[in-house]
Length: 317
Image 1 (cartoon, rainbow, N blue to C red):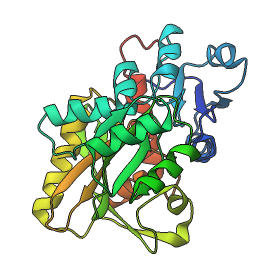
Image 2: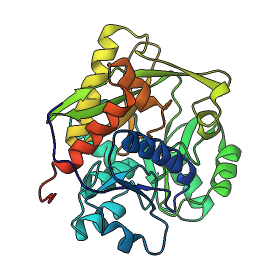
Image 3: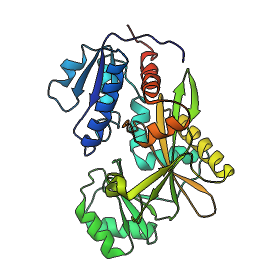
């Protein structure tokens, strides 16, 4: 890998205020250990701290090991740009659009990527939301908060009663997003910027053992799923997935790295679901697993991500 400017002090930014706080902390600790092991000078910062802005000013680069609202949606990126601190991951616009499921699908579909039909309903009373969604999407449907990650608040609804129950369980201040529940194989594909070029990592297939879909609870219990990487799918399907992931990354103007999620139907057709602009960084997570399948060890993955921050315009070592 080409040598990049080596920052004197790296702030590993983690934690935060989102519902993905614990997953963020796991990523942050793993990234911190890797950077320390490689001889970098680091400080671990919780984005939820009241004095975070003052703390981060003393660092040369912010390594973002964080996810969810106020972190992956452009708000944190905007603060760091105001403070003129380079950071890892995508910029303000790509982060904000990527987190907004409807906007992201619109942009990616316009670039020629296959997506499922969907509906977006702002946060209103439950009866209004129920009528709007059932008029647009037939049952069974999958319901998601518009701007959440990690499958938080997602549920499969087979009828109006289940839809009403799901709407009453989770608060979605930005509204709701629904699409047809499509059975198939969950597959994810990461894009990594290496020496200025975009590289698609081998797609990873997730095999839930007993859940109806790869939901929040399943993701957090390693006994309920297993990974297969590279995914055991026809070569034409794998090619379509990597092409779609590259197209989505570029269409949304992502930088550094990203991870696109797909559902592959029984006939081998992949449909793009959403993008993660700050994928998790745990040692056994899907990004690290895909990197390992491409011959990239964990420390090299962290260095590669860091390099995309230190080459941002305006970086001053």
